[in-house]
Image (cartoon, rainbow, N blue to C red; front, side):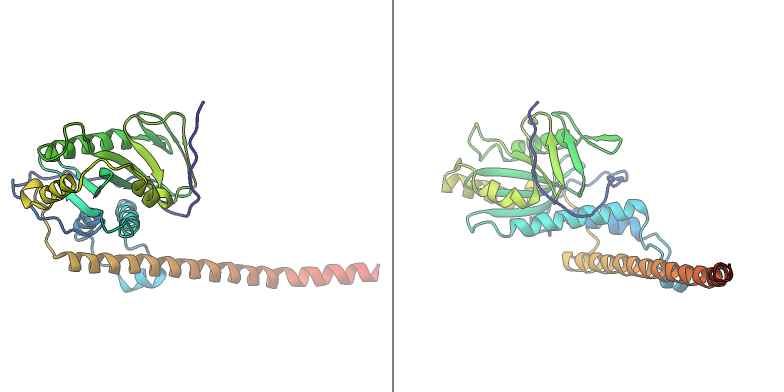
Length: 294
């Protein structure tokens, strides 16, 4: 049984965010230019806006400012931003787009890369610090089989159809699932038509792809992606800079709450140890004196 093993990693979430029902959207369009993780940040902020503000006492005690589902969306956005940062280090002849809503669907593509080696649709996933055992149909996380491979193939097919009029007839958008710094990935068989890779290997893998586009073909694909009519409208209440600022503020609140909880845990453990010592010291002294007399 063949296995592919990649990576070494760090801490993160172990559940998928639960997406709310996507409303029917008007057939408008947007120009590319969104930041990495923007679609996830928009959903996180939409869910969080109805949460009542924390009391002063809750903040002082380090109560979590996000519920479990919101925290999953935050971790997903962080993963997309990590992958986005990796993609900024591609050579100059590559063009990168983020959070593009796919027309006629409720999906968005996390990252889209156009280069000499073709077009790549990239899904960033956040199951870090764990072994992932995959199959050609799904990747199980805990007790759940996640349809990452199916979704990646669907997004690839949708974007291939959008770009078909300017791509060579045999060209397709290659789907990738990028796991951000996983412990290791164990695949019992190579997934059909989907590449599963860890984030540290991503840049090198893309750059190593053999050339499939001429400069003229690559320019035509990029021009179509740049056209606003290619993509579904995104309902964005705030400018990207304000969205990013609000997301950063939430990150800081989550980190501050975690530090407060850790501090209280350490202080409580120290207080318990001190109390235990105070209660047991007389007994220890009495036992020593008793043994000395005997």
